[in-house]
Amino acid sequence: MKINKLSTLFLLISFGISAQEVPSEVLKLTENIDTNKIKAHVAYLSSDALLGRKPGKPGYQMAVDYVIKEYKSMGILPAGENGGYTQKVNLRNSKLVKEKTSLSFTQSDGSSKKLTLGEDYLFYANPEKAKVDFNAPLVFVGSGIDAPELGFNDYKNIDVKGKICVVLQKSPDNVPANVKLHLRYPSTYQDYALKHGAVGVLLCNYENNTARFKVGANLSIQGGSNVSIKPDGKLTPSANYMGGNMQLAGSITVDVLKDLMKANGLNLEEIWKSLEKGNYVSQNLKTTATGSYESIYSDIDSYNVIGKIEGTDKKLKKEYVIHSAHLDHLGVGKAIEGDSIYNGAHDNASGVAAALEIARTYSQLTIKPKRSMLFLMCTAEEMGLLGSAYFANNPTVPKKDIVVDVNTDMPTFLAQLESIAPLGAEHSTLEDITKKAAKLLNLSIETDPEPTEGRFVRSDQYSFVKAGIPALHVKFGHINSNKNLAEDVKKWRAAHYHKPSDQIENGFVWSASRKYAQVNFLISYMAAQDKKRVSWKKDDFFYLRLKK
Picture 1: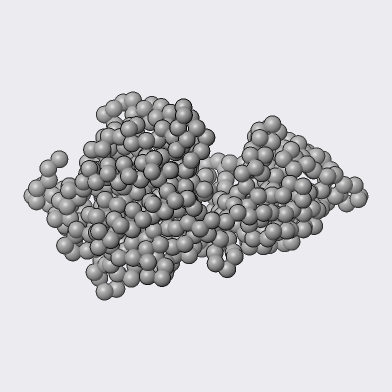
Picture 2: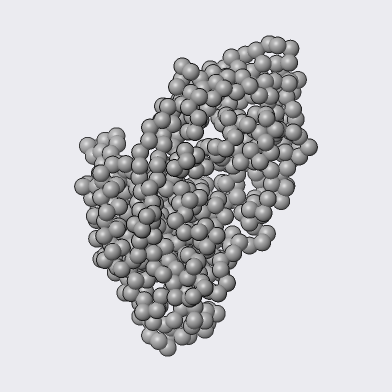
């Protein structure tokens, strides 16, 4: 739609958006977002020459060099380490030494039972300590959640200091979808336990059968777990491991937990029923866990790429609005139909391309926004959001001055953009900003159309949320004149997601990329211009979590 100055003013007034927030010349500039440039970025980043952009490989370095070249061509300043554009991220894969891993449960009467790794239990390898010996009492903490504001207070009136917490995992009912996703992460359970002085956590998924447990456990043992390591040797907390004083993190089967409860005069089925009713079931156990394990490491260096456009307000330019996108993909892997290069055109060359075009649009502004802009291309998202977690916990600018993160990950340009699902916006004043941006572009807003996919916790914005920084991830909505869009997306994902066929030839509607870049630009621009910085809603779970 062609927008002239008069119609722009009408739109601004109608939607309660002041001309100071989005001047007409800025809105008009977004019309010049170049879909050909977006396509060219995708074409290069997803080409076979980059071999799937796997961190630590030459193809990923080619992607890093490409982004730096683009930043320089736009006049975007370096904002990495040592005056450069990069931030080094040490990535560590940790694996258990199976023959040096053991776990036994000893009862108060002296009887003991030795468990079998991969069949009865799983440990996560320890990325900080190569050898761990443990001998600690077990304590049952119900569903393992310490969130009284949600009606969960499993650590009430029970001492877990120096003990290993046994958790019976239960998805909490009647809580927002994003909160439920956050509460299901292993590191969330560990975080609660650590804050109460525990030294370990053993999770049990009551709805997981033994056969499925064995498959998952042995895949985990074979592949190990990934974290990012700081220069002092300490880890950045990841999805599976919090670090700190955590001696032991892992899981046990339902059969093991049944036997454990029986040995303590308890019935697991009755406990589960009581837990489902919302009853408090935490209690001490007369059982001690004893064992040891060793871990071996494989380290590689990779890089986040960070550029900056300085703000114009004398005070507010010290604060930062971030555009992020993950630069990595899966590299070279198992061949499918003769192709072993996982190109990652949609995931996430397209998100990087959109962010680069947003950066170019900012570079062309005659008057830059009040706050400074950071453009962050993250490494190792596919390994567990490691690059973004590293930056969010060890930023190259003062953490307190980061206002918001606007993340672009796998936009999926399969159809014209008519509706957006701004994942995470509802937790902060980003919600109001997003509504204004959407209305300017005649976009409707919907809630996450695929909440079971867990997309809020599977992309880099989640790293910022966990670090206390408001963030969102704009996804295509499914409300569209193409009534089969949801089904088309489902079919595309089944055919191409995380497969070598995720290539530029498969499923791009390039004209859709302009409006997607526009709405993300307008969200960040209004956040950068507003005298009030983006803030958490005061009754929001993620805000209350920070206050503890």
